[in-house]
Image (cartoon, helix red, strand yellow):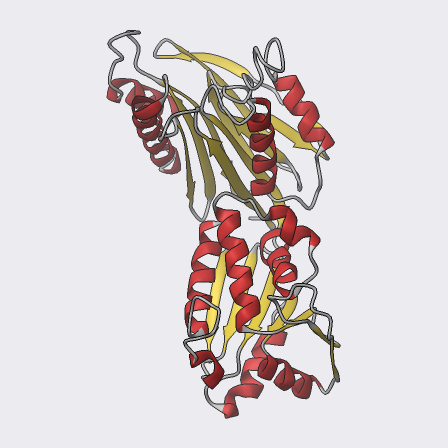
Length: 389
């Protein structure tokens, strides 16, 4: 096992007028592998959703259990119901299995071919073809390098704009060119997938003619971010908490007025506070030598939670927190763009001000903030460890 890790993200848009998406993405992570399956069910709506859900769940589970692809395809074909109108029963699919963060196995059936960006440019990987249960399957194995980006998509992506803005739709070559032009080594997998899927939606003029899904996997080095939030319940534990916090490698963020003061005293460094309210809802940041970022506590972390939840959902606020320089935006960048592993050091001391029911925040205690933030970050694939004091 090397120091690399796999960042995964995806976004789907439904065919115009449909409540359910006919595409489905399943991600399974084990200590040895990361498996992503993107399935595109025949047709659209409820039927397509059922087909793609069955396909993605069956394949991802079997692949993660190290079963042969031939068994997976045969199982899918024998399991899916038959369409009475078309007489076929299948869902197209793309499988990307990354093992030990060293190599990727790519298995493709009737979806647009996976794009691989290496150093920001399209990389043509070898593709072998074989027939399983009468279906033509494409197979590839790729040795991984840092910053490799794999982009999988349903065929809604290459039909975007057909008949309206383009004669033949947004072809794979166009998507490759778009991905190359928009490449940024700091972009997360979620940001890459969202960017391309949003571009497809624009070409459909916000009325998609097909379910459209884009999924991305990015190979990156592990990076640790440590966040200290609140003083310990027992004042005698301040030194222990600070020592453990600063002993960890990676970047260090301190949130909270009392916590910042204790940190300043522990380090023997002066705290310089700012009076600039970049965002009227978020208190100003401060500076302490030896700390990467110093912010206010509950209001700032609540702002971070709002951004992280949006990122895990519709991702409408991405540009906002990437351009603003308030504490909540800066922490969000650290937790989403920078960190693969996040250590929270949370003090249980009660701040009487936080018990005021009139505070304009959704939670009356910081414990709930940490719990909700940790849960959402885990859903985004971050490795989370929380220590309480």
